[in-house]
Length: 224
Image (cartoon, rainbow, N blue to C red; front, side):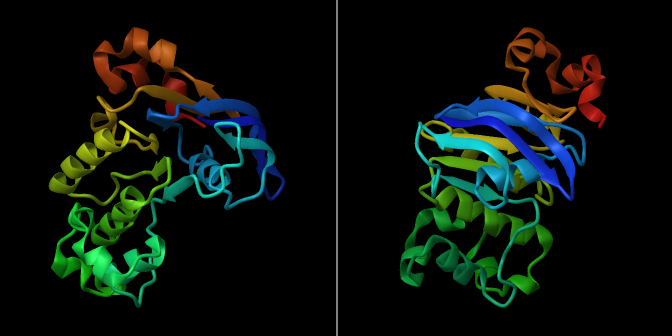
């Protein structure tokens, strides 16, 4: 379980999240909802140990070092390296092992992975970044706006990858493409008014109309 206690996140003196305590299960999917600018990406950076915050984070009661991997909305690739080389660098694997791994081409072809990242479209770069996430051994995967830039085939592949990963890992997601996340979320959270609110019980009660219907009943989801 990834657990945060009394977490406060501030940027340039502005508090985005204040005294928040919440947890994500060891296995399964958690969906984080919130308006643009609510602090979702910043929260993810803190959970991965990439940004300072006040409070405590633990994974099953221990320090989460190396146990949380984030695939950010904007793929952080080395632009002068090929897709394959980026995978090698991120996963600390030899080239031959990366090429021979069947998971390497879960989202991309050999042709795409052989190109330098600067020559790839945003969607192609995103697919390389997502491949890295699912190939890691981290028990907690955080997917920041994973659907942005992906075509239909890639979205189908992403859905399958999330379902498979969630059988043995914690998968935390954020996004606004509600039809994609519809059947994937085991737990639903809302970032609003500097709080991280677990809406799962309410979602389980009201989800028959889908996330669009849920948003309509809770208009504050789309406001900040």
